[in-house]
Structure formats: structure tokens, C-alpha cells
Amino acid sequence: MKAALIQITASDDPAANLAVTQGFIADAAAEGAEFILTPEVTNCVSASRTRQKEVLRREEEDESLPAFRAQAKELGVWLLIGSLAVKTDDADGRFANRSFLIGPGGDIVARYDKIHMFDVEVSPEETYRESAGYRPGDRAVVADTDFGRVGLSICYDIRFPRLYLALAEAGARILTVPAAFSPVTGKAHWETLLRARAIETGCFVLAPAQTGTHDATRGKQRSTHGHSMAVAPWGEVLVDGGTDTGPLVFEMDLDAVDSARGRVPSLANARPFADPEV
Picture 1 (spheres, rainbow, N blue to C red):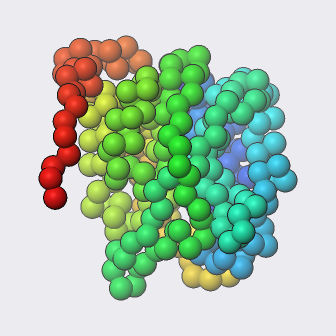
Picture 2 (cartoon, rainbow, N blue to C red):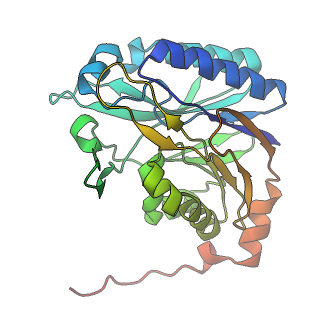
């Protein structure tokens, strides 16, 4: 089957981001893609909580989601909106970083709220406290599609292999990792982490990414690594999007999952063990 990773440089203007993303989705469908994936925070990349409060909406009020649902139905494709930043009813006012899997009928098949928050100090000049603005999810999610079971994740989740083993053990054959990865950590770790998760689980790993320097109405501009990537179950990189924007269409042979797991059946060979004494 054909799939496509959409690479964009989203700004802090959701309407503008929607127009660009829908154009790339249409291009991917025209090339025959049946499963199309967009990056993390497709609707808004912003380092300003003030700007986010101005432009973000609750899921039921968000203008991007119904537009993407209508487009999936019009094109007859499976569409993973890597994530939308949406408001919640939490008392502390934090947002959710929520992934949506949309079926070819336009229905929302699955939702996933990012579990692991990017609270790091990459350098004195590059510090992130995602948990200050977003509340973490607490549930792993798999969903059935026409082409197999899909396990959902988002960006920083990639550093937590137990999540991906749980998704694979729950029957996932494809793992999605939409991202807005830091350029510093991206250069050092992005490809290695994606390939490791594919090899450990015998799954396809599909990772659409944000790229470049993002226009900002308020606050500092963010930059992201790009390099949207699809990795086969044996660890081969099928496509690497570099740093340009646009759709990246490729073919997946889903029989490769059974082949990889047959050659090295690590999921079947795993054994329970006691945690080390501390």
C-alpha cells in the first residue's frame, strides 16, 4: 500500500496551517496514498501561552478537525492528524496535545493524548517545559484499520520503549510518531530512536515531522528538525523527508512485519522478570 508523511512548517495561525496542510494532503492522495499522516501540533506551533490561549479551541469547537474529517471522507483515505493543540476543562488551564485517527468515512476512530511531556534542558539557551502548558495523557491507544492495527504516540514518547512494546504486544503492526523535534536532539537521536523502536517491535514506524523556523506572532520563534521518516520492521529507513515541506509518498509491504518477527521473534521470546532490588 502507499502511505504519505506530510512535512510542514506550521506557524501560530491555525487557519493558515489548515490551508497548507490540506493542500499537501490532497497532493498525497492524488499520488495514491491511502494512509496520510501529519505532524505534531499541526494546527499551531507557538512558544507563547498568551497566543495559544487566543487561538486554540476545545476539540468540539476547533475548526481544523471538522475540515480534516470532511477531507478524509472526500478523498476516501485514512488520515492521522499527528496532533492538534486543544483547550481542556482542566482547572489549571492546561491544553491537551491530542492525536486523531480519522477513517475514510470521516469518523474519528481513535484519540490519543501525549503521555510523556518534553521537560528538558537541551542547553542553557534551549529549555522546554511542556508540562507547564499541556497536561499529560495516561492511556496507551491502538486502533484497527483496513490495513492492520495502529499504535499511536507523539514525539517525546519515542524515548520510552516500554510504551511501544505495550502497543506491539496489543497487536500494533504500525506505530505512528508525529513530531516537532528539537534540531539539537533531532540531529543526535531522531533516526536512531525511530529505527530502534521499529527493530524492537517488528513494526513499521511512521514519523511525520515539523521542519524549519516557525513564524510567531508572539514570543520567540521555534525551530524544528524535519526529517519525516518511515522505517521498516527490519530497521531500514524507507524515506527521509530532509528539511523541505510537502508530502512524502512511499510504499509499504505489510508482509514485512511477519517476516521481521519471524526472523527475530523477540516479542514472543520476552519473559517476565523481577525488577532489580534497590
